[in-house]
Structures are given as C-alpha cells and as structure tokens.
Amino acid sequence: MTTTVVTHQPGVVQSQVVVQVTERDWSTSLCGCFEDIGSCLCGWFCGPCFACQVSAKAGEHCCAPCCVPAAMIAIRMKVRTRLNIQGSLCNDCILETFCGPCSACQISREIDNSCNGHLM
Image (cartoon, rainbow, N blue to C red; front, side, top):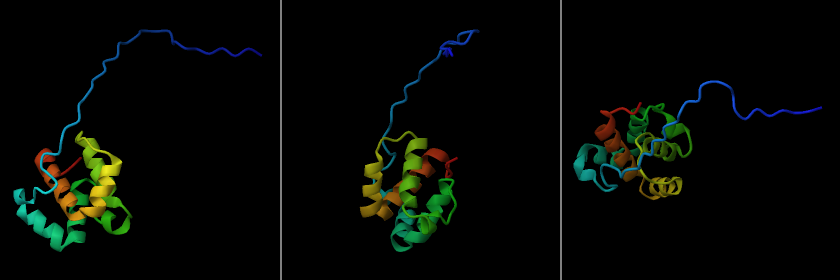
C-alpha cells in the first residue's frame, strides 16, 4: 500500500499578508483611581457588586465573579487580549490576588476609555 501526501493543492496561490501589532500599555495606571472616584469607591466598599458590573461590561455574565473561581483573572486576561494590552497571565493572577479592587477599577476604566463602556 502506498501513501501519497499532498503538500500543495492545485489552484490559485494567494499571497498572505502578515500584520504585526505591537502591544500597548493600559490607558490608566493600576492606582489611577482619582481618574474615576465613583468606580474606586464602589470597588473598595462594594467589591462583589462592582466585580459583577465589570464582568457585564466585559461581555460576560454578571454573576461570573460570584460563581466562577478566578473569574476576574479571566476577565482581566480577556480585556488585555481584546484590547491588545501587554501583560501576562502570571501578572494578571498576582494583581487580582493582591490588588483585586484596584485591578477591577483599572479594567473598568479601560473598557470605558477604549470601548465606550462595553467590550464586544
């Protein structure tokens, strides 16, 4: 029995365009709460409610932060990926673990600044 491997299909060869997009920084710093005092206060004094609001802005179910372990890490990573923001999963985990309210506020401000309030 002979096996034939086709490495090139007959037909028109189309050229491929490779676009390299550089990652950018967050539009506000992690501790940029003075740019949005209302979100900062809500994030600190009503963290679970604010996390649900940020989840909805990110296009996820509003109950995800209450029902899914590490949901805010996933939401931060989703926002970073969609908006082409530099960072890493390890950095996202550390920020959400030790600076959760500030991180949620930063995510909220980024969505407001880049996507008119809702991440698609």
